[in-house]
Structure formats: C-alpha cells, structure tokens
Length: 355
Ligand SMILES: *Cc1c(COP(=O)(O)O)cnc(C)c1O
Image (tube, rainbow, N blue to C red; front, side, top):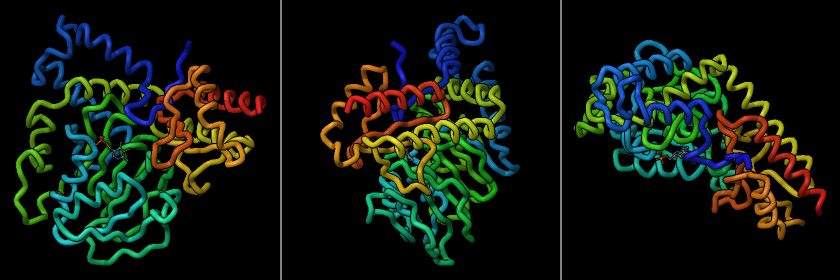
C-alpha cells in the first residue's frame, strides 16, 4: 500500500532526493565508489558542496556578505553557537514553544536572555504580538515555525535589531528577506534532507563582535574561513540536500514551493474546520503551513485512538500529535504531495460518516 508520510522529523523527502541518494550510495559520480566511502576532499565531493552552497544562495536570493554553512550538531547545537558567537550582554527572545525555550536556556550560559513575550499561558497555541524589545538588546531570536504546536511567524518581525532565527521546520518553505538576519539556522531533517546536517546562513560582518574566546569548532569564523570543510562535514546528508535543492529549482524555485504549501495547508485546515469530529489547536491567524495540529472535538474525545487506527489502514503514517499537545499533527513539509493531503482529508471524511 502507498504510504503517506506525515512524520514531523526526520520527515518526508522528495522521491528525486531518495532515488538520487540511493544511486550515489552505490556509485557516486561515476567514481565506482560509494559516496559513503569517498574523501570529503575529493573533487567530486567538493563540487557537491559548492553546488549546494551556490544553489541555496540562488534559491533564497542570499545577499553578498553571507556565508552558507553545513554543520553537524543539529539545530540544538545552534542554540549554543548563536549565543556563543553573537551574545555579548543582552538579547531578546520570543518564547513560542519547546524549541524556543531550549534556545533561551543555552543563551543564558552567555548573557542576559530577555523573554519579551511568551505564549506559555495557552500551551503555545498562538504567537505573541505587540511586545516591546529593550533597545539595548543585541539581537532578537525567534522560532519561525513551532513544530510541536503548529504555529508560525510567517512574516519577518519588524524590529530594530538584527534577527536570529531557528527556521528548522519551515526553512525554504517560502521566500524570506535574508538581509534582516544575522543568523538563520535549520536542521535539515524537516525540509531539506536526512538528519545529520544543519544549515547555517550567517552574516559575516556579525561574527567576531563578542569579546569572549570561542573554541575553534564552535566559532562561526572557523567554518566560514574553511567553507564548511574545517573538519569532515556530513557528506551523505549534504549530498541529499543538494538533490532536494535541485528539485526545488526544477519546481520553479521557492515562490512555487510556497504556492504549493499554501494550497496544501488550505485543503487540510478547511477540512478540520468543516468536519464535526475535529478541531484545530492553534489560533487561526497563526496556523502553521508546515505542521497542522488538531484534536478530536471534545464530544468525540473517545474516538482518538480509533481514528489513528483507521488512518493507519489508509496508509497514513506519523499523524500522532506530540505528547505535549496530544491529538494529531500532520506535517506537510515541502516534499509532501497534495495527493497525500487529500488522502488524509478523505480518511477524515470517511471516518466522520462512520460516526
Ligand atoms: C526539530 C527542531 C529542532 C531540533 O533540531 P535538532 O536538529 O534535533 O537539534 C529545533 N528547532 C525546531 C524548530 C525544530 O523543529
């Protein structure tokens, strides 16, 4: 049976990415060797990382003066690295969920992390607005898409200071104005490739401003000066990312990807709002286009496990909600085809008829 993969991360990748990665595992670039067993300094791999960087710059229209890095350690390492490299005294944070809290926790190792607003009062079901940021904050950090709670800050916040953003779960899902940011980071395993590589887009002139000493591996300047090749980078995940980038380009770029994402999310949210069995958990104006969170309508609370089983018989995989929200979460990342969203919607409609 065809599987419809709604996992939150690691998550669905384009068939092109999977097929091309499989080919390279067997024979990489005509070398007669697997990509798993080739030097990261071979000319074949050098051309992979160079193309990945160039293609990302092209697709996201990254301005001059920014470096694109492919690092290990996950987005979680960036919670530490961003503050280590950028926080001298004080920075502002928006607390919109578990990942935001983790970023705040790490920043506190280096300076004052001011929480300017939080949606913890309503289990992170909305994005706080209308907050003020102290003028002496060196940057404003936020999580653009809250993977667990299904909320999203779609437009770039209008603030006076540079932005640092964890874009792990909506990276490359719609165009953004990179020039407003000092650092953007994203674990690849939501929208780009397999787990193991993290993309960091960093403004070069924003590095080197803090006075503390930074260990070599945690210093952005190390990786900028060596083009992500200071040590062995995650070779295979980078290759897969390149395949996804090529796929985005073949679709017509990130504006086209965005159109598809808007259309997919609309189909699913429309059904949640129409279907008597289900209700969405995020406030409507902050609903994520990537992670669609919903629960059983309280009247039908007892049907939760039954719907999960029912959906499973239709090939629907990975829709169990995160334990801190419960219910269901359908992650509909860039690589998710509308056919799979339709399959989920049909299963919701069929299930409604049964009750
Ligand atoms: C998944 C996720 C993370 C954690 O990423 P790791 O690569 O596992 O460290 C951080 N932030 C957001 C928004 C995420 O979705």
